[in-house]
Length: 300
Length: 253
Image (tube, rainbow over all chains, first blue to last red):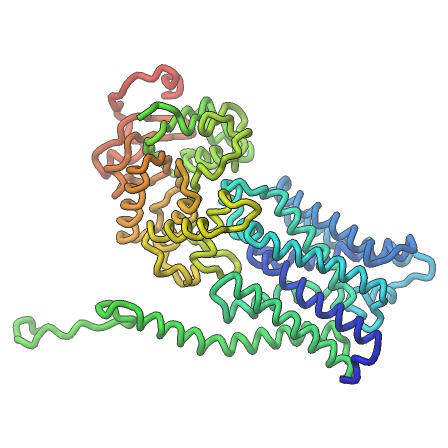
């Protein structure tokens, strides 16, 4: 455990754990509403913020937060009003965001695409104390929203039309989901990078689904997977000199594969248990009626 | 039975895209009444239902719920809604209880469910005969059971008015019987019901009045066609004798 002696590793681990908690916590609602790739879109928009941060000599983390929140709100507005060809509008937003990032960073004094790389793929070892402060504050916001409003967010993500009739402020909750996802993207930006952040939002949830039957269990397992892989990836990268972002994402996918393999016998056992509780006259397997000829009347 | 309307539509027009779907609908459901909305595909049944809950914007006309203009209506706990769905499942596994609990949010303050709320959720599950499946994932259910879960979700708030969009679609006979019994119990307690149906089926004895739509207009508003089969179908054009309702004559084109 000698890695804990270094201040940069302590910061890296703290940031990694916070990402491991927040990314699946908001990701589960995106997966539930079948917008699994929204995090990816927000990541592209956040690049413009990073570029602006360099250009204006402001904190790239806070500028990225600002632009990705604006981008996420814009995506929600497109979803409401631009029913026709919403996908095209979203594509323009994504690629406009990416192009904007490259443009601004090259306009910045002494800036080049090399500066962008640490944001695209993460740069865990260079997380500064001020980054840690920002990440802690943003992560607290994400946890507060995703746990505090879990019933409302569950209802809206499950069935928007029904949620409206329960009197929930559906639009406000949709906007909040988008903003929270945007905040999570910027929390994860330094750890796994903008291009890989969506993996941590989606894959732990997909892996957890292999084992769980309820939303609450899926949430808990997804966060547990998120924390395990971010710690595992950070520590691995310390000893093996591999990029932490990519290590974390590959570990997440490995967890998915492992749990999928484990889940098959589990679901078989559940099916057997369910069959045991069925009434006796309703067998779980098809039964071919016995040939009707014991008394010899119906010969074929 | 008082004649206080729980739902009232007057001259409702609505468009989807630029295509007029509702062309001046008048529809009233009074307290304790069970009204079936019938019509062929594309006649505007679902649009009419969805305009009542505010999912489809009106281009003209007025809608009132419990005497309050819909835009000002906030007391959604009085309304139970069953949308047209073939599944209760979303992108993430959820148990039957988790789904039905979201129907109770209209009565819960700040989204916190108390003991009484959990009891109401359990009662709703018992009403549709799904209490023994409460902890199961909805992914493990049959089509009819999905529909029972969706109805339990609407009942969890203990509403005074049920609005259902094709609750019998894709439902096996056993579940249809359960749903008919559930609805009968609700009606006996004074709940008003507006439901879209393709055919009257096992609900026929419950229905007080049928409103038949065609091309976004009210074609018939009166006693339900008693015979099942052809008479239940829209496009069955003979004039049913019923009390004159002058406000509607202009629409029976």
